[in-house]
Structures are given as structure tokens and as C-alpha cells.
Image 1 (cartoon, rainbow, N blue to C red):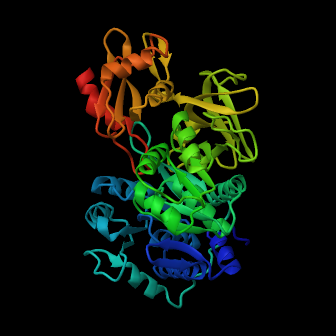
Image 2 (image 1 turned 120 degrees about the horizontal axis):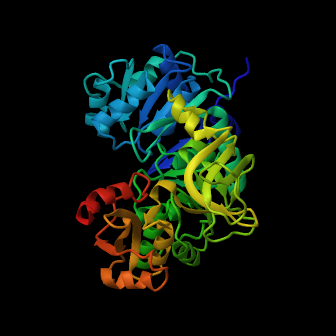
Image 3 (image 1 turned 180 degrees about the vertical axis):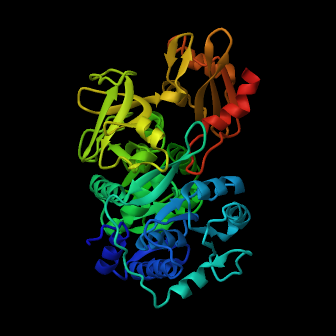
Length: 514
């Protein structure tokens, strides 16, 4: 039986350039040969314990060399990777392990307390492995990664026979309500995202990417880690994003490709103004995860001299669905064109397709759409209708085929019967010279149903009052759209990828508004 296994791309890159650096972290350089050998030992160690094709394996590791070693080792053994945020608490860890039915669990030693608490609540685990930077004593109830590698010596570390439609990654979506759901991404889903993404970015084996987007997240895992390994490029690892450190690595490692979320670009602009940086090797930047404000895009490109290609996707679409192209017209504010092999359409609430310029829900069909939500047939049937994945995002298509996001369907503010799209108001606030970050959202209102509110963080050394900012927006949008309340905050809460967390903001601020 022929095999179709995502980990095969690492083997191919290792055969092509065995001595080329695959990973860089501080003073450590791991070649493609070394990475491939370590991956084979992990696969052999899992097999030695009877863990193989179809088994799920939790992976709770930061952006360190051990992440790709374990990630590709799990795939090579024929198992499914269940990536997990390293900041999860014990009950959350227990939920991920139980919901996925995990047979094994790898976690970073720095997060042992919550990892072990979650593992203790999931008795079905056959293997719990503590991964540390060097030899260390694992916590009671866990084995250490070095013992696993030793146990794999002499065992079969070859690529398992898996099929294109086998689940490679069970990627849990954060969701806006209820428990997260596991999106089943197949080997074919993820590999096609690598192939198409590499073509769009014109990625080559001599490129160096900065790996600071969390690999447990769809964007960092697919667009940075997997795409770089597929092309045989080098990844400079930065486990925790800090703009000055990132700029130092761009200079030291001659980074050519940077992928990030909008808040990272905002942080870069602030750091750029405070230092003298040599970033001349940077040739391309990629933005995703949230809407990139036009003001931020223009300022970054002016100062850094590298174009930003904005794309769009979701965990359920592996994740890429659209991208702007380096060789075609790039429309500022657009998420670009559908990627090769993928279709998009705009539909109304009844599911009927809409024409150019009409606003509705974005639906996606193609090789990138997940197999379904793990063990949730009803949720899968609701999300995927006749092969089309309903995103919950609101947007429109222009006459040239470019797509534009208006907002999240669930973040839409309905004020007195009028639709207010938070992104539109955020774009206006970003034009104010004192505004560094902004989030707009709806709050309960007895007479209107919802009212528009905003939270703003200001640039260092600059000032603005809520009243001044409200006037600024009021002069630029229709009367029903401008926020009646603006909160000035030291910083806005962010998730692991740097995306602003509006739900957390509302928890903090809505009680004062209601």
C-alpha cells in the first residue's frame, strides 16, 4: 500500500540538503539530518509502546526544536497530532486529552504542574512524556523525552503507511461559545497548504523564516513550520515574541520571511522608532489571524521596505483560503484572491449566492477544508453544507474577484436595527496619531439592543481623551456608528498569537457598561 504521510516532506528535505540548518535557537543549530534522525527516534519510541496509526497524541510545547522533533515524530509513527496551547490550565488540558481520546501526551517541563494535573484526570493515557531542554528528572507519573528516544533505538523509525484522508492534525478551534471543537485536518489538507503557500510566497531553500508565531496555532504551524520544512528553508526560532529581540534575530540570522499578526506589526513600528535596525535582508512579510489596519500596513512598508501580503483562513481550512499575490495587483484592505484549488462565495442568510459588492457570509470549498469536527457530526453538518464550509465571517467580493472582510458575523453590532461592523470603526481609530491598538465591540443597551464601545491603548508619550477620540470618529462615520464610550487602557489583552481578545475585554468592561 502506498503511503501519503506529511512527515515525508522532512525526509525529502533531509535527503536533498542533509547538512543545511533546519532550526536555529540561540547558539543551537540543528541540521536537516539531525532533525530527521531525532524524528525517527520519536516515531520508534512510540511504536515500541504500541502507539501507532490512528492514535491521538497531545503536544504541549513552545517554539523550541523539540516541537518539530515531536510533531513530525508523531506523524511518522502514523499518529494524529493534537497541538495544545502551552498556557492551558489543568482542567483545559484534561478536556483536550479526553475529547481527543489521546493515547500519549508530550509537554514542556516548564508547564509540568498544569500538564500533569490534566493528565491525571485522563486515565486512558498510555504514555506521558516530560520534554526539557536537557536531561532532567521528570515529574512523578511522567517519563522523560530522553528515555523515550533511548527506548526507540533499534526499533522501526520509518514513515508509517497513512493515506491522504487520514487525520494528521486535530486542531482545536477556540470558538466563541461552548467548548473548543477539534478540526480534523488530513495529510492532504496540510500538504496542499504547504505547496500552495510556498508557491505564493515564492519560498526557496535559501530563505530564512522567523518562527515566533506559536506552532500549536494553525498560522504558525502551517504557514511557517510546515511550509519552511517542505521547502528545505531555515527557521530561526523565537519562543516568545518581543519586537526588539525579533529585530535582532532578523539581523543576526539574515531572516528573509516574517509571518505575524497585526499586533506584531504594531509592535515592530514602535521598536523601529526607538532603535537603529539592519533589516535589509527581509524581502516579504505575511499577515493573518486578524484584519491588518491600512495605516499599519502603509507605515510598515514605508519603514521596513518589505511588502506585506495579507491572507485569510481559519483552523478549519488548514488554514489558508485566500492571499494577495506578489506578482499581481495588491488591494490594500483586501484579503486577496482564493488560493489555487479553492473557491469562495458570498451567501445571504438563506444560503443563496450573492453578486459582486453584496455583503454576506463567506463560504469556502476546496482541498483545504477539514474532514469535519472530531466526534461532532451535527456540528460538522451545520458547518459544511454541500461541500461548502460556512465561516461565520462577513465580507464581499469586488468586480475583480478580490475579497474583503467586513467583520465576524458573531461580532456584528446591531444598534437600533442598524448593522455596525467593528472593523470599520477600528480602521478609523487607527488613523488617530495617538492610537496604538484598538478593539471595537457591542455592549448591551436597554433601548437600542446594543451600543458601540471601544477600548484603546495609546502610543508611548502621546495622549488623548475618550471625548477627543469619540469626536474624531464621529466626524468620519454615520451617526449610528461611532462609539459612545471609549476606554483608555495601558494595553489590550491578547491571546498566544498576539490577537486581541475581545471576549476578555468585554468581560472586563461590559459590567461597567450594562
